[in-house]
Length: 103
Image 1 (cartoon, rainbow, N blue to C red):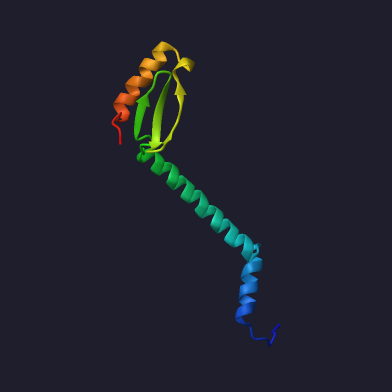
Image 2 (cartoon, one colour):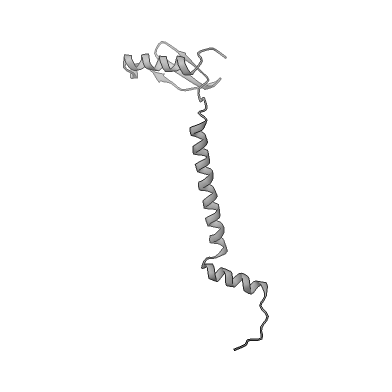
């Protein structure tokens, strides 16, 4: 049987879309999801390869230790909340990894 009909480009687009069984919005949704997962994996991998220094200095007061994340922003670690061994370990780690110099 012969059907005298000329197929257009739109006919091919619709046939391919029907063949794949999905709408164009889903196709782009899968692509966006894929690249978001790849991007997240790259960020996690980079975080393991490069360990940034989040604290720039530290100061020990009478009752607390203050590790600074910027010249004006710091965290408060109360010494009374730690055991004496923990305080000694913390001081050792701070001396090893963070400068205690004033900026």
